[in-house]
Amino acid sequence: MAERDTRIDRLFLRQEIADFFYREAELLDHHRYREWLDLLAEDIRYWMPMRRNVKFGEAEREFTRAGSDINWFDEGKETLARRVKQIETGIHWAEEPRSRLSHLVTNVQLQGVEPCFADPQEVSATCRFLIYRNRVETETDILVGRREDVLRRGSGEAGDGWLVARRKIILDQNVLLSKNLTFFI
Image 1 (cartoon, rainbow, N blue to C red):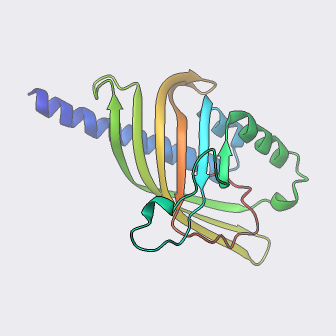
Image 2: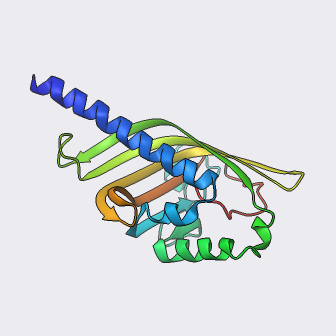
């Protein structure tokens, strides 16, 4: 019976995490950035390393390193809040007019749960994403990749629930054709 309970707890938790990611995507699609910020832990690390083309057998060189190499993003909540504030001014050149966004999230998998499935306080999860952005008449961007997230149970501005404590964003492409990265992933 305990094994069955664990499987059910795991199933419910995976769905709860997936629902959290879907809600987050919806907030970003509708430019509800203040509400999105409420889903982030105060000590969040929002990180997107750059990707390199490397020879077979050199996988350790494929991604830029945290703290010593340049990355697309390596931000905390304060920096993310400043980016939101800048976008909300209405005079942000890269978001005037605003982008039309669609964040698609799929393949949500739980990688680790602490302390247990019955009473999770911290969850490591991965997912795949596709972001479609269109702005003005001719600018279209598609970003595809995966995320490695650590979610923490906490009480934030949005009430009790999950908060994103760590986010590592891994793009499938190594060359970005986007003119800017003003949107959030």
